[in-house]
Amino acid sequence: MLRYRTDAFYERQKKIGYNDASAFLTQLKKQPDTAFLAEVSSVSLQQCLRHQQRAFKRFFAKRARYPSFKSKKHRQSATYASSAFADHEGQITLAKCSEPLNIRAGAVTYHRHLAP
Image 1 (tube, one colour):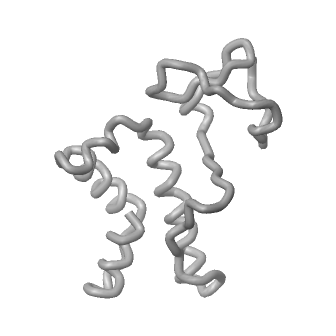
Image 2: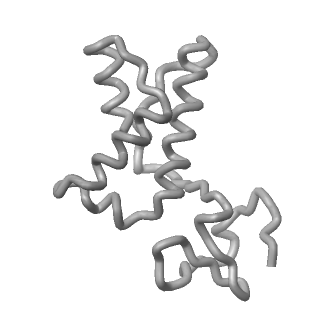
């Protein structure tokens, strides 16, 4: 998605907003070579678009540098909206996953209290 927005900006001088990026993501899910995107919860993909939109707003407001691709070599993190996971008896299950996550103690940081 970052490549799509970058190409639009540098090649066509067009800013791609959240709605356009979301529509493009929907098209990507329907293409055979990127059909794997449909296997992932749409909530986490939309959250990624929201984070990217915030990064671009900060860039165009001259409060940050241009958004960049993130390295996979270092510590990884993910943000999930409350509708993207379920907590049952201490076991966390993500949307579109049939089995609970196998999480070691201390590996998860909650930024908000989970309702029982």
